[in-house]
Length: 117
Image 1 (cartoon, rainbow, N blue to C red):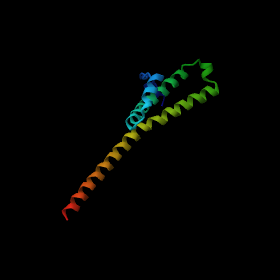
Image 2: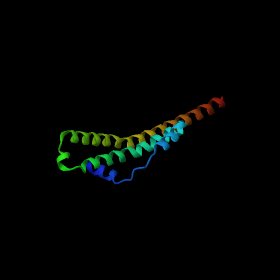
Image 3: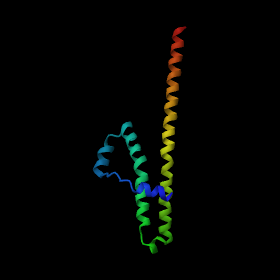
């Protein structure tokens, strides 16, 4: 897990200002929600990895303190919780598209057969 955290910590974070968030959130619709989801899905592991890397850079004496270890483990757990979202959401999206395709195909066949009577 530490290798993955290190790999993500080497990626650059996308800068976001409060102004950007206000402008983005003013006209909330399905498109902005999907863009927000896509942004968070990619950005959240990077930001969590950066914070975990900063914690591991603390002096050794401080890093051995139990509350610091606890916080570091929370960030590691949160980071590991974001990773399956990538594969799961992609597979879920593909399955939903497949079902929609089959539903539309079934609907067309039904309508075609209905009009043939």
